[in-house]
Image (cartoon, rainbow, N blue to C red; front, top):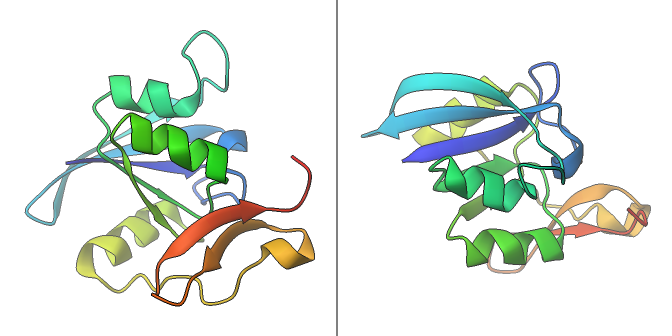
Length: 132
């Protein structure tokens, strides 16, 4: 599988679309085989991030949050989205791979922050009430 993680100075930002770049990690049997850093094309010539990532073979996205319209676009291109990752991108990837990444348990959208909202089933959905 190929995992993409939005990064800005090595950390996962709150705003997926505003990241400086994406860390791509090729993973096999839970082991990271290769990592590459690619600039975020934004909504320019490379297309919006979901299309750009799909063209690069990404199968999974690990992020802090993902607004509903973007989440739908990732679904359309077949990229599975895992939310709730924070801090150092490489550490979050390792935690996700070994099953220790804990989903966010409190939604941030009520306070104007951007990020996931926890659902009763333990899954998370992105949300943003900040008007972005």
